[in-house]
Length: 213
Length: 213
DNA sequence: CCATTTGTTACACTTGGTGCAACAGTACAC
DNA sequence: GTGTACTGTTGCACCAAGTGTAACAAATGG
Image (cartoon, rainbow over all chains, first blue to last red; front, side, top):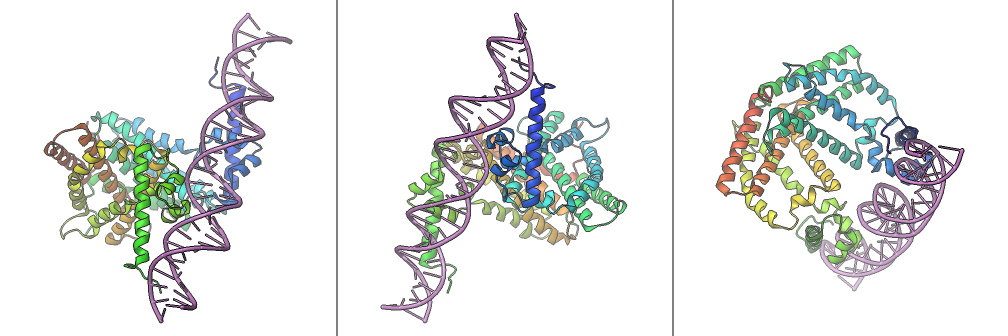
């Protein structure tokens, strides 16, 4: 009989998975994505190459293996929102809360190769990132369609989803840029909140007036 | 001395390029993307494998080698619009004009493997498509930022660009779906125009009220 | 006709990724 | 405990995408 969780087998499997991911990312950060081969990763993690690919279907997945978190958060902003909150409100709240990533961003920036540096400038990793993004949009769009009771094929849910995720991403990027440029948490937080209000002001009132004359 | 165009060498080069692309796409349509190797393409086009990769950096580029067209069209909607037209107006016009793709869609649908079938369901091609898309968004965002006189790092142009391109894509998909479901050009055109108005109505008036209660 | 440029080729090589059969440790039933 | 089914890991052979390089051949310009 199969057992789903809690067993010793499951535990070891997860350990192996984590070990592989950690080993790989340490190597990537030290030397860059393309400069590390899967054979090396396997050797460093003392595991066979086949095992690496058993856990991660592609080399890129070794970098993005936590992408589900972001997906879950975006989705929760839709499904678990308090009564009276519009979806736009929820996403605004989600974006305002991005300031909690500031410490992590600061930590990331001291690395010789930040996570961002790793991804940006590497075509295959950028592709993978867009893929992850697109998946989030799709999931969100489905949730929106369900809530709106949209008929199948209705393009609106997808457009709204793509807009919201796009806004979230752009604001995240902007925030990281602000952190990179320096300043206290308070200053950055204030500026970020202003960004969020500006963006959601536009989204709330319509794009027709953009750019302003 | 180098010569940019018109020479015999240039001509032959373009011929080779076209030949390779045509041969490849014919094979892809006949048997599917993964079921055709680059070696086969090279053999069928009577060209060396290296030559294929000289013209197209990746196998996926053989499918998307016309992507620049879409990019140019989206960009023109911003830069070449008549006075008094907002960007939103231009994109609405661009989306309304999508009905001109209906004949092409009809032709595509009779193929054993339509272009859409080729891409959808193939992870690497989907990734490539998202990459192309993201590039269009970036180019458009830059144009928007320039026009709006936005300061560097401003997230707004990117968000607007991502929304507009997302809308364009979703409406295109919807249109193709309508074509697939059948109906006269008039019926489909009418339905499409209604879709466009609905979408741009929402974008013009703000997303706050979505979904309606 | 000669010299230069440049697209094409052959070939060896690296690397990501798969399929398969064998192996080893875990789970479980008795 | 012991046997047995399950499942994660392994080694290995193999495929295909993509690169580097040096040689080749056609076009260009003088």
